[in-house]
Length: 193
Image (cartoon, rainbow, N blue to C red; front, side, top):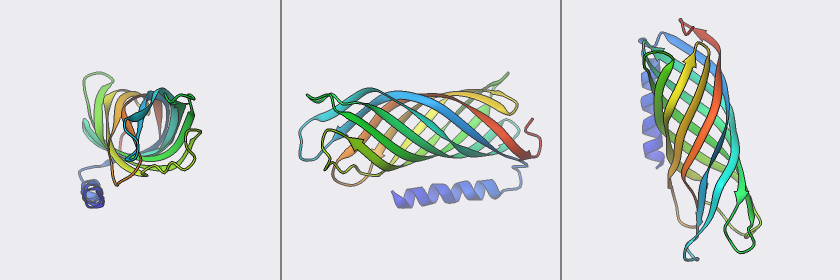
């Protein structure tokens, strides 16, 4: 997984260094999300499940744009909390860093379609179920969805999943999550409106 991650990051750096990307900007974003989680352990048959786990995300991004095509690497902090389906209805919360590499294309009007791979690192998991539970910390996923872009302001909705969590042991899976939020461009060179 480290090799794949390194290749994607290297390709993004080479792409970004190319002079055709004359428009470069930075910005911030924040949003809310809901989705399901599954916790699977090698020692336990079946999975613990949490439905409608709510949370928020916030972070910063760079924006590289050429005509109607853009690339937006992001650095996000995510917090989620909810209830598991075990007998005691245990609470769970977790903190995660996520790095989405979003590629987008603008369509007529303010509409854009965007998506790309995401790289995850879990910082901390708090749960009442089992305090000895050790979750695999790294994973790879995806985001895809529409955005409405009005100059420096964008409103987004995306479908996200954590597709792979490496290593042995307990895994936290998010087969899907729906995110909604806003992002605001702060500075730029070139003409990003």
